[in-house]
Each structure stands twice: as structure tokens, then as C-alpha cells.
Image 1 (cartoon, rainbow over the protein chains, first blue to last red):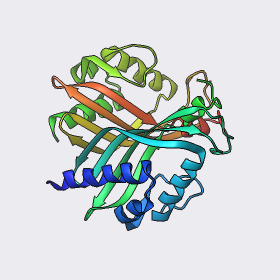
Image 2 (tube, each protein chain N blue to C red):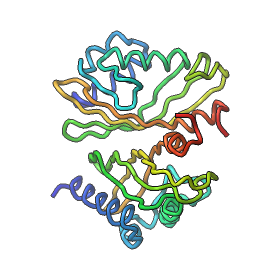
Image 3 (cartoon, chains in turn red, orange):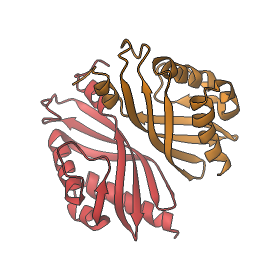
Image 4 (tube, rainbow over the protein chains, first blue to last red):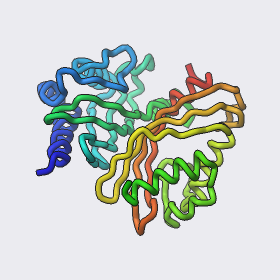
Length: 139
Length: 134
């Protein structure tokens, strides 16, 4: 298995076991201790524990939170993923109370691996798309 | 640089940054589709229309590609674009504000040209910088 295949396999585990199935031990295993988040959520630390806090927050806002991977490619030590999260808006999200609407959140992200662990992350989340789906912005 | 990376690099640097939209046909497949564009427009003209819309709204727009990741027929890039809001953008009149907007995108290559495309940019951040949302 090439380095890139190993990194993609780890990334799939991160998405399936942590982001969808809420196994925080998988996140603690795969994220390096000196992990840095270049796209941290406002008000949440940009470190390893901040990632776990972010997903606890997202799950409090969106129920039945499930990730679907549409594309994943790797080159050198980076893995790019195009994915979406589906969930029901059941709690406060960025100050907007629950609407019980089903929401799809499009996310692109790039992580860097070193020795099988993620050392940094950046993403673009379609926040405007979420706001349209919960009726805060015009669609 | 690989042939596929060169397609994307030329699209950003020559077609958009150097405003040579006439080379878009060399790079974009006749059946090109962008899954984020409004309506069902396809092909090089659809790309030119959207590129032109941004250039009209931000005449000094410059895109900086920070990295390109390639595997098989798929390419992903990320970076940011910056510019001054001098023309109408999605119904917002010129504000004269300087903006910087992060983006990521994905491309699929077919027949040596860019065929499919997904783009995410920080639209909420852009609207915030333009003062359109809190």
C-alpha cells in the first residue's frame, strides 16, 4: 500500500468512525498531538480537543448527523475530500434556534498527514448554504 | 507540472488573472459542467460568464492558488482570491471594499480538458466583508 493509500484509509476511518459514528477515541488516535486547525470554528480552540468540541457542538445543532464522501484524492502527504453532512436542525446553530429542517452541509477539506496522523486541516464549509436551508438567508 | 495541473493553473493564472478569457476554450471541455452555477448553462461559455461576472464586480480580482492536489483524473486546488468591490455583485451595489475570500475546488478531466467542477468559496465570509450580513 502506498503512503497515499494509507492516508486515505485513515481519513475514511476518521470520517466514518468519528464524524459519523461519534467515536472520539478514533479522533484522538488519528489527530496528532500537535495538530493545528487552520479553519477552526469561531470560539473553539484550533487544536486536537477543539475538533472534538466542534463535532459535539455540530451534533447538538444537527441530529442524525451523517457524513457522505463524494471524492477523496491524495498526493504527497495531503488528502483532499469533498463530502457532505446530513442532519436535522434540532438545536441552536450560530445563534439560530432549531427549525427541525433537514439540512445538507457541503464541505471540502484538505488534511496533511505525517506518520499516519493528521497534523493540520483546512476546509471550506458552505455556511451560506446552511443559512439558506434553515431560512435565515434568501435562497 | 503535470498536464492536468497545467490546465487548472492556466485557467486561474492566464484566463482569469491575466484576463485572457479567450483561452478558456483550450482548457474547458465543450460539455463542461459546474454543479454550483445557477441554471443549466454548460461548456466554456458558462465558465466565461461566471468568471466575467466576478471580474465585473471585482475588476482587480486576483486568484492565488496555494496548492494543487492530483490523483487520477481528479484535481483539487485551494487558495483565495482578493479584489475591490466596484461593480454589482449578486444584487449588491459597489461598496468599494477590499475582500479576501478563501476557496477550494475540484475538477475532473476528460479528453485532456476540464470537464466537471465543484467549487466552494467562503460566501458567508464574503457577504460579511461586504457588510451584507452580520
